[in-house]
Length: 150
Image (cartoon, rainbow, N blue to C red; front, side, top):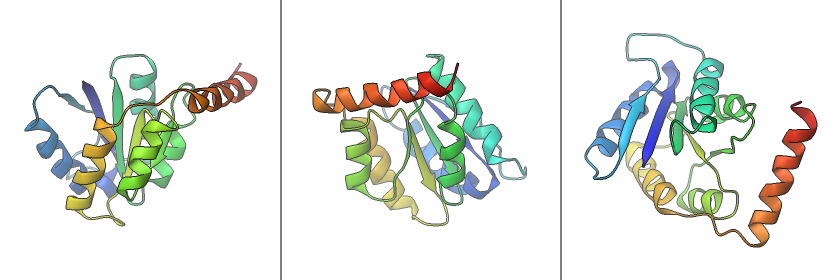
């Protein structure tokens, strides 16, 4: 699985921890578009960059990091085809994949710890979209995009 990471300065430490964690796993290709420790950057730029990379098919999924996960997920969700979910617990991580086919995960460095973030990432990466009635709903989300993104 190809995963792209992105972050602003508010999520750089959590991104670094999760990046190291993911690089130890078999079968994952990790790319990092985010800023590094000594840089400041704006979350809309990072959300857009990761969103565009996932939407273009360059990566299978994206993981974003900022202070809360909120701003960067809002930015990513402006890219057509992106369904970014802020998750602060394991149940939401699983549901975001199974029910919403989320292709981008957003985490907040200031609201969750590293070990919880690792669990959330593991569950999110292992969960698959269930389709069925959930597929019908995701199609409705796509129709909303089509209406407003012409």
